[in-house]
Length: 78
Image 1 (spheres, rainbow, N blue to C red):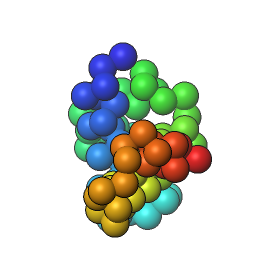
Image 2: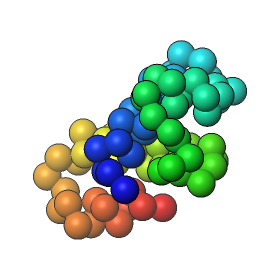
Image 3: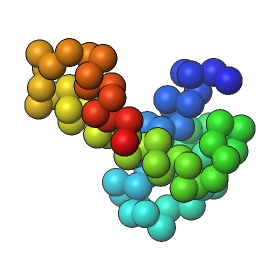
């Protein structure tokens, strides 16, 4: 699995959900990412969970830039 493609799908999900809300379809997310969502995620729920964790990680890094990265990863994995 390409981590670049997976990250592209997560970014497309963030952008699509920001404009369309949680009712955004997986087809629209995939279209915005120009790729097959279900190759990288088992379901829309799995994509939303991963998207949530990614947003949480970005916020944590912005709020706590000097926090040890290993501990930050643990905090953001739940």
